Length: 217
Image (cartoon, rainbow, N blue to C red; front, side):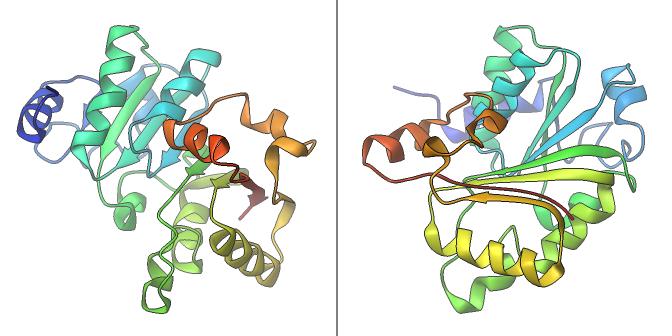
């Protein structure tokens, strides 16, 4: 039997690689992630809505010369990624438990080098458009914390979210736009570094194509 949510919450509260409300670091790291948390000057890569943290940890394994932060509000999910990072002694990984709506309160302007949005909730209902993590509201937050020319990546299995995001990006006339509705049959798959989340593997087994977008906000 797996651990209960309460057990997981208690565990991450003690983790040095998790920053959440109540920690001494929470709300104090904007502009200081490299200096005070990672204690290096390496590039900072942020995963928005990281879930179990599989992408964050996967990238950290491949690129020890970069710092990776997975952000999500669901502590029980973050527990999985923080456990993997702890067991593998990955010192370039952190998890931030916070609402994405307030992500700009946790980073200084231009502090982040790159952002990944991996398999977010598509929020299909019209009333939830503003809650989509690629809506103009969130793109403005990303623009604020990204360095000039910083790249955003989106991976999704959802055709509606892919088309919606593409339309938003074209309206904004973003630079560096790359897009494919079938990532693994395109020449863009190299950008995803061969990292697959649990859900992604399931989608592929079911014959669902993975959509990918890369752009500068």
